[in-house]
Image (cartoon, rainbow over all chains, first blue to last red; front, side):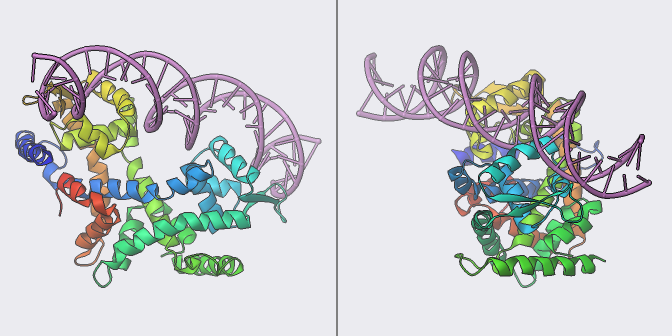
Length: 178
Length: 178
DNA sequence: AATTTACGTCAGCCATATTGACTTATTTTG
DNA sequence: CAAAATAAGTCAATATGGCTGACGTAAATT
């Protein structure tokens, strides 16, 4: 059943390739379709892990991202958080307010610059953030543990080099990686 | 340069870790925070490529995903598409209708089973799908080209093993990979 | 004193996802 | 053959997480 469709697909795809080739800037056969799809599925499953946990707190993925980066960068300014997440102030506003109201994040006025509201995780926030990281970390650990010698470093470099070049230094600083 | 930042971050992270530790099921220091974040940033930039192109057609990422998998699996059934995308029939409905209305996807009644509406890309659909794949493929190619010998295969295995184990065979069939 | 910056907020809009219920064809099965 | 199951579509209501534009306030900078 699935196999029938698959075989039919294969044939068709090949036919499609032969009829429409030689004209694009890229030969279709050279495109990394497989990698594109693996990354899609890998990421889909990777982010699905925390969802069950988040649901118990009536939080979504947006909360997860905010809590994560605040926990990893205690004292972060709102502006930098916006820059990391690449969302608007208004979008951040809602989820941040919930996290503060529910006692996962704390805002403290900056000491040197009193306009700033520096963000810190509370103990509760640290705990939840950690909880959310565990399944993702385990998933990555399992994936890497099956790789040959040096595979971990290669996987890391691979991901790092997918990131837009101009942003790599910033990410490196944040994530603590060359 | 990157090293300077890297060291600063390390110190910071360690300070944060020492205050709240020792209680979780996993020692925080062993969690792959760096990888978690690299995957986050890598995916964010990876999916950002096609957005500009899609905007010209008034399409979003949902359209991209549907068009991609239909183009890669011509003749796919609606049910299997739902299974791949892990969304509901209703969610698929809207974007699929737009893609059909705008002439990017064609529906044909199944020959053996006339209940089925098999999905095929039109020539226009193939072209757009291809266009969307090019920047993503180039990004991956650049990332892999800088890896040491055998790096490509390792990167692929890494992504493959992030996927939920029970689904790997299905993904492998789809993506054309072990 | 004027300007800029950091942050917050109100109001409204859009895209994408959800659940639940129901319909229509068509195929499968007892 | 009649009943049940399946494939797909559709209506309605709802939630989430983005967006823009406009405006306000406090604090720092010039």
